[in-house]
Picture 1 (cartoon, rainbow, N blue to C red):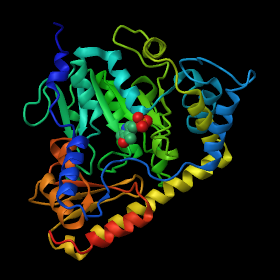
Picture 2 (picture 1 turned 120 degrees about the horizontal axis):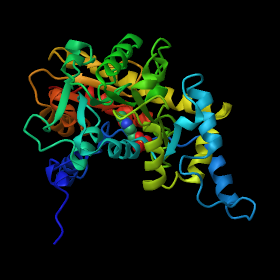
Picture 3 (picture 1 turned 90 degrees about the vertical axis):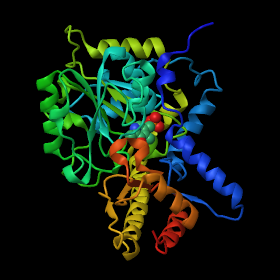
Picture 4 (picture 1 turned 30 degrees about the vertical axis):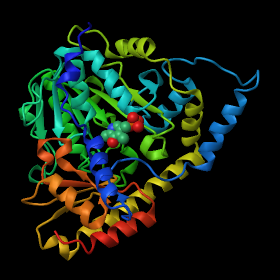
Length: 407
Ligand SMILES: *Cc1c(COP(=O)(O)O)cnc(C)c1O
């Protein structure tokens, strides 16, 4: 018999979201009349822009004609889309041959791990989006869960005490640093000075930053950088992973991109960009051409307008949730609420309680599903993530229930 990849065996059972779904199902089965509302999973809910959907529909119909048909495209992506992304987001910061179109940021993060292999040293913000660590475990770069997190991973607590920016002095030389801003789950968005400190640290210590900018479109404060490449020196130490999922509601359509600068090198002096090109052409066969047609439409004048409106809608949901959690019924228990207005998540601390206890209580008493912060890493304990992805009426109903909640 063939042995199982030991990395898979090392993964802790019960990935966060299936466990949430299990508890929700169990509750619903014993309370069939409960109208459960989810402020839990970070999935988009609002319909696609008609303009963007039409571009995909037209492209799809074109595929049924001899003139409009195309088969495999370039594995790196449609060159028009690569140029448009460069011009829209990375003017004077990156060139089109450094932009690689993909089927999404999560998939790219998993593929990026093949660039560095099982010997890579890993550091993550704690709490963090699960794929950074779980993907590292699968590939063997991180070991068994030792109770307070996986072996071989340097967890960098990001808490109210350090203003959600980690103590970089804990990071060893030559480490792969996963950094997400605006952050999932905390919503924290790094300032220019903070990102400069991160970039300077990485350059000085031979580290590479995997910068997850999936929520860049939520940044409304003009002083905050939307891409790591706004920071001088980032081209020699950073890869940026990005996506249309959250700005354009493409969670199901699937288009993302990754920027790998030509100035980024491995220890042996070889170019990371060249190997990334090799990975994408070898393990990937290009993003869907229909989805890429949609992404192109998302970047014209009307598309940008529609994306901005959609993100504004979610940000308003976030403000409604924050206002609710700022209520007296929470305040009297010392609940601390963090919402920056530059990301879709409201992050709240319930002192003295575990995340799962609060999760269960909100589920039982409000019939609202949230996300326990402890599922994102040890430093997420006692926190709950409230997602602003939802229809306004559902958000308002959930908030009406939460405003009567007694902890
Ligand atoms: C949603 C999310 C992604 C996933 O992006 P896809 O392009 O849909 O794969 C990546 N990173 C973070 C932090 C996310 O929350």
